[in-house]
Length: 246
Image (cartoon, rainbow, N blue to C red; front, side, top):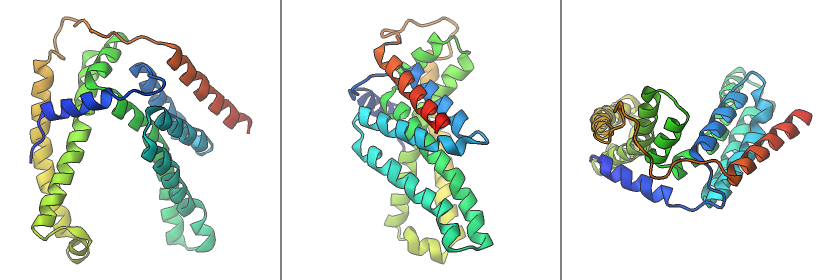
C-alpha cells in the first residue's frame, strides 16, 4: 500500500483548516519547539519538564485536540512514575537502569506534545513560506517541507504493513513473543522499502512544486506575527519564570 504525495497533501490541508482559538505564526510554533527542546534536554532540564508539559496541554486545548490534552499529562505521569517511584519500591540495579531511561523519555514526551501542535496545525506550504521569510538556506527549507510530509506518510505505511501482517497471521503480540527476530524482520523490511519509494515520490513532488528553484516564489498568504504570537511568548516566558523562581 502506497500513500501518494497528493493524499498526504490533502491530509495536511485538512489539518491546516482546523481553527485554533489563537492561530500562531509557523515561526512562533517552530520557535516554541526549538526552545522547549533546548531547555528540556539541557543538563538541568528536568526542572522545566512541568512547564513544558503545561505548554503542550495549553497548545492542545487551543487547537481543540482534547484527546491529546488528556493523553499527554497521563502519559507523562505514567513514565514519570516508572522513573521516580518504581526504584523506591523495587531497589534493584536493573530497575534503576530502566528508570534512568524513563527519566529521559519523559523529556521526549513533553517535547512531542509541543511538536505535535506544529505538525497538526501547519501545512507544508505555510511552513515553507515561514522558513523563507526567516531567510534560511534553501537546503533547510526544502528538507523541512519534505520531512513534514514524510512523517505522516511513514506512520500510515507502518500501519499498512502491520495490518498486512495481521491478515497473514504473522502479526500481533503472539507472533512477536514466539519469533521476535522474524517478526521485526517482516515488519522493517517492507517498511524500509516503502519508505525509500515514498521519499523519492516526495522529493520529486517538492521539485515539481518549485521548492528548489533559485527564484524566490511569492506567498499568497505571507506569514505575519500577531497578538496570538505575543500571547504565546508571554505564556512561555511566564512558565519559565515560575519554574526558575520555584
